[in-house]
Image 1: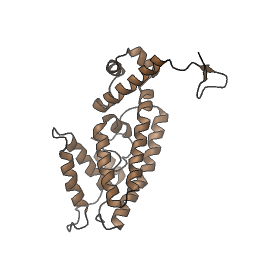
Image 2: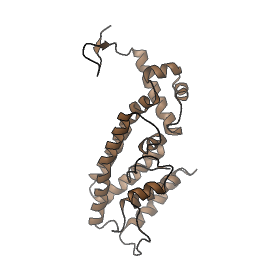
Image 3: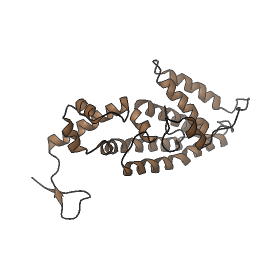
Image 4: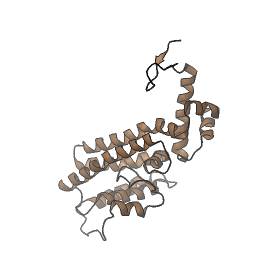
Length: 236
């Protein structure tokens, strides 16, 4: 059997590539983990993932030594998809379209994948490399969200007393409605929220907007991780 250089291994150390059946098992495990984490969150156990994949628990651990390594393999692309959503919104023809794209897309992502929400909010212990990746991606997203909102206000399509944290709170509400037995009801409420963002609303907003820290404290204990990146994540 042909040998290939092990990626990241010290020079001179080689390993055999995965056999076809082993690679099939790996893909079955990843598919099962994606389904289980989306449905139940990241607290789901490796035994349950193994049952869903139709393999033994030992097979899962041979491919992924612990749950952190499985989470990293599975969710790296999902975090990247979140960044791509914000980039898409940022390059929309106008800022209002971008804002609607961002709010709608982020709520859809969070409702479809409970595990992604938990990962972004630090609700589970993961490898340091994955934690660093998430923090870096969210740090990249935050100024882009603020830019989209600022452009919308400069274009006159969003009222000037709306802040980024206000937009985050509206998503908390939409996410909660999305868990109703009438699953599409959140879209109706989204239309009401968007109407309220328009500058023709005459009454000023009561009270002061939350700071990032106040937003974190307000949604505790669910938001146990770093301060949420507004519009990018939707905690329970």
